[in-house]
Amino acid sequence: MYDGGKIIAGLIVFLGIVGFPFWYNAGSAGYKTPELKLPPKSKATECIRPTDWMRAEHMQLLDTWRDSVVREGNLVYTTASGGHVEMSLQKTCMDCHDSKKEFCDKCHTAAAVDPYCWDCHIAPKEEK
Image: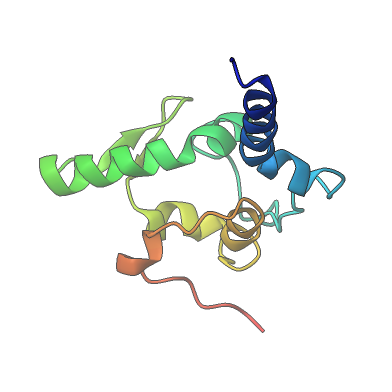
């Protein structure tokens, strides 16, 4: 009357489908933080924010910069230490992190993220 066999079979199929991503990736290697090429100490003095903050929040910061520069015409950012820098990916960030391939691309590739920053901005030339 209750078709218990069909219900149990349906639950098994449902759990198999819902759990497929977990079963499929079980045992595969986890995410490894890539080693980045940091700017030379002689070139990099201080980032605009602490490293951990930049790792977690750089995308929001760059979106805020874009909106502030394009919509409000504000070109100056006050850093965490009270300094002032020009809000420019190319002039500020890439001045120290001059290798897009060794800095940006390594993390974005590892995280399977395809940012659209370079659709508008010019990537720095890589030294050979």
